[in-house]
Length: 99
Image 1 (cartoon, helix red, strand yellow):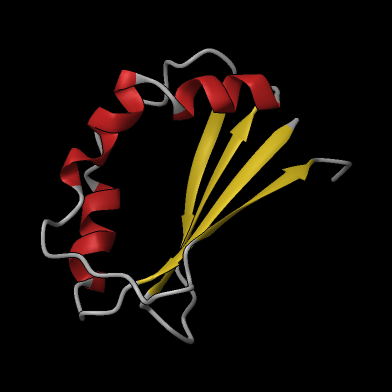
Image 2: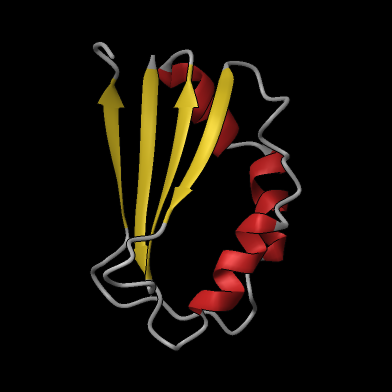
């Protein structure tokens, strides 16, 4: 199993709108080949931070999604005035070992 974790921090006090956009997301990834699930984490210690955690059967499935039309479409719901703190955006990749 392959997990991609996208990290970012909202700079301009739009974190509530970002959270709402995730709650109202169009679920375009859900039918993608290899998609398992998506989780959005928002630390209680800093609500401006977000981690978008997607679970995939393999890395190839994630990368196919990441370069797809549906990926671009899925970002249409992002608040237009969103600004991110510089140097806080990153993606980490993990292999799931056990539970």
